[in-house]
Image 1 (spheres, rainbow, N blue to C red):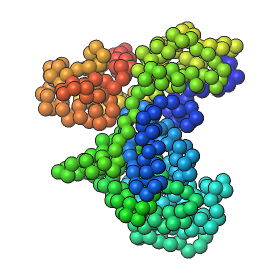
Image 2: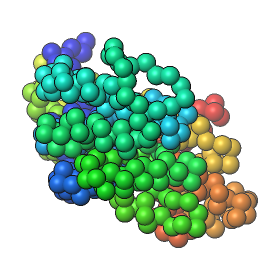
Image 3: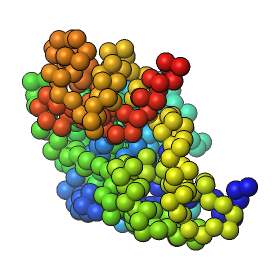
Length: 391
């Protein structure tokens, strides 16, 4: 019988508490510098890019904690909350998030009732009638920058900046990055009046602009901090910190094994540690090799199945053929010419599918005409799936 006095400290799929955050030192320093720059009236924003499960949401929550330490009104939100996005809906969404954050600050008595009342009256002027979050007459503004300017006038002297941390922001790149261009234009207008607003979109971003214009203006406005896998040292630090919270030790030799299995991918690492920890018996105080050997049995087939399904099960027919071919290759690597020969297809026929798989994060382009699976365990998942289908 498996009994634990304390819950499993590893929770795959949930953002890491800012106090448990490890690594990303240069990226966090970059954020701090841009925050200070913005607070001083020279607006500086950034983007956060990276694959699924690599820790973008955890990074945003850490940035939020840092921003609050520097007395900013830090607003975390996710665009998953919006079905169809337009400039008007995005503007209304952001102002509503400001209202909700100010309400939260008022409840915590970090802002006065006077500021709360002013902010709650602000809305973007639209054809649709909006219901205020408080009773009283609303003040309608024609656009996002004027509404944010009004909000800042109420907050000035109490806060140092307004920081939007926008998760699941890949939707902003649709329609030739129109919405990112819109946010850039808003920031340019705010800069004129030195209104300290910082915007950080995060997601599987490419930060591209309309064809023919180049993407450099967008990159200058939202220079991407690319979040990648943990180093072996960062992975060991994360594991140690989590286990210390529940009074469980771990053999030093385990760190190398965990890193080799997970490649330092934060979601895979957390899922692996979750699985091994669940094998601890009542009274045991240290994770040993036997716990990880027990976890290995079902790890890819069961624990990682929901995570890997999005990459393989939901892909199109030719994309699945591409992934299957790569799964059979050493290290999951293959060249375009090898792939074309293996599948009996023309290279120009395969190229769009490879581009889509790269965009979706299933594969990585490692050189011109050469690709690899984003994680070697995806290959194991695909082979297990094929075996099950044959049975």
